[in-house]
Length: 577
Image (cartoon, rainbow, N blue to C red; front, side, top):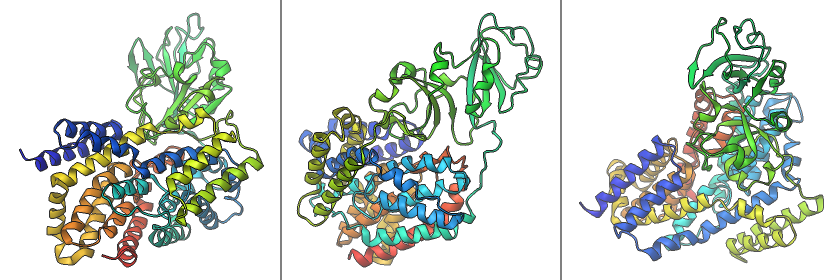
């Protein structure tokens, strides 16, 4: 079997696993690269040097510095500017401008996570009217600069690996700025009429579910559900009973309660005190729950978390985080069974009852996005915030002007943050995102094998056979469409990794400048407006907005069409073949 065919089969298997399984993409890419290494398709020197690529180092530095920026007053101040009047259209425009503007320089995932709490707590507009515009604006803002999204930096990693001139900070602005302006105009002028007004006056059975155990000696033992008034709770509904490992669902009014039963309630988690009035009914099976429940924190499971695919019980949640999962929510899906046995998925909303040591635990940010701010998070003072923001802006300006490289300028800022106490050694370590290093370093190696083996050329030849009659522009459209379709099924970073070698090989086959094709896949990888699953900002707002799949499709389809027309029209204009 030829090397090219083996590589193609490996890529097909990789794509299927990315779509069909919950295995972290970093492990899948690393496993495929290791297989190529064993087959001698890549040597150890080339494989290891991919993990110290300057663009990859820049990305990690930016993620660490973003944590420092989030400790300043900037996000809190800007989030307070969002809702100023009764006009929904103006509010969405202001939200889009602020969130997108921040996302041009700070990781868009961090921006969305920090704006989530003030939007959810506002009393003027339903959060469902604002959260999709928040996510889409952050995605659009990330396309304006090299550092706006990890996708652009990953693409730059491939560019550097192929010996091409590295992309500059503002190379993306020529197409990214029109995308951003047209996008927020659409969201504020037209899309707000399509956005659902999901009001949360009445709790829905699918919203959250929590469990309570019937302890020995409870006076409710031996009585029916109806006799115990378990059906008369205002905001909670008894949906299931777990008895000696067996599930009883639905629960009939004449079901007799037994000692040791686990009662599964659904509804509003803030009505947990309604269960306290019952005799010896203990919530989430923790002896110190009355202490813990005073400090409830709502989080969303990150797409980068190593908890994905594992149950709360398997990861020893209580000991690992000093927290107990009180309730779980997954979009509009009906969850069933014991909380501890639920297999966690990206975007799951968890209500945690946290202990005193929760905020001191390592790598919280790699597992969770916080819907309500962590109370123990220490903010920088006003003067410290000005210095932190100033250092960061100067670094970006000097890099853009070509005075110093992006990596060097960011390293200097990180050193200053550490020396001045803006970031501790533990905070730096917690925000290194080693799984992202593994993903990108492995992806660069896989892309290199695809190009050197001829596998990328094989796929490029297929694209050429379809679009060749339309010339370079037609092939660019084909590459963009392929990338845009892939990003509906797999993450943006994985899409960029798989699309780059195809785009590069297509450009070489045509004998044209590869830069337009490279920019097309950079923009295409960040264009998932149709599903909540494969882009991290969409995942973050999916649960808190109480959205359904069709909401993203209805609002995102016109935006995706506008986005595609602008990219395919402007990229060849500013980046010549």
